[in-house]
Length: 97
Figure 1 (spheres, rainbow, N blue to C red):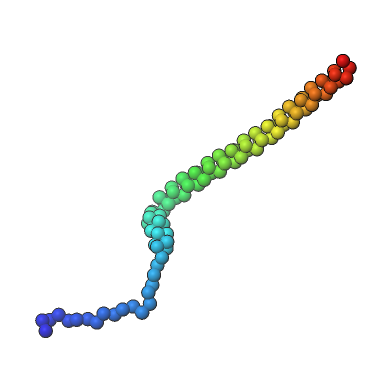
Figure 2 (cartoon, rainbow, N blue to C red):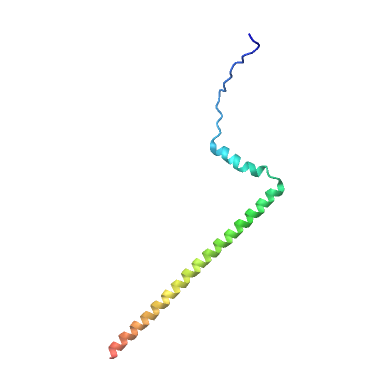
């Protein structure tokens, strides 16, 4: 022999497979895990600010929509009442005329 020793190939008996979703979850969060504490606090601060502003905008939009609907409903009811009064006036005029 020339001094090269051949080693037997050992095949694993079980296949440990990590799904791609598990790998991507680990790689997505790995950058956050590696940040220093100060940077993590800044990320938490900005994310909480964004969430609170988005929630405030959402609540404001909902209040505007519901307020507008109530106003339109009231306007439609008052227009219907005016139309009914005008109709009754015309009926009375035809009866007396």
